[in-house]
Image (cartoon, rainbow, N blue to C red):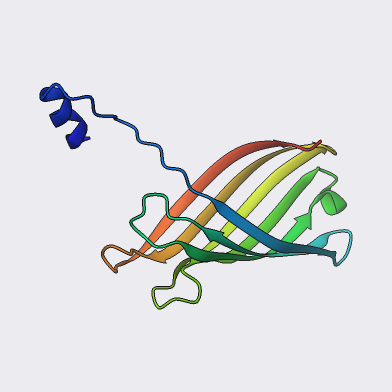
Length: 150
């Protein structure tokens, strides 16, 4: 921002927003298992390789591993309400000395009154170490969403 303001002051044409092209490829496996009509287990593992956005870091491998337990409350209370607890870890710099990552959990409540539409509220928390300061940090997330499946 400072660069943009100083450039405009000097009469130079300086872009406020810069675009950077990067390529990312990934592949993974997702599995689900219905323990009963009420409970289900979900799991996923994803491995990818990404170019650095700004060339400040080297290109790196990243990984995403998750596990979830879901509960269908409609079996007990007759209301189309679901609950899911997800835990996982996202890591980047896999197989390098500078590996770092984010541990997280999410709790999601969703209403599915139709087979192809849900409305949900999600609350989550992430735990990570800042790469610039080395200090342990947390981030809280709240999300409201509508999902349409076709």
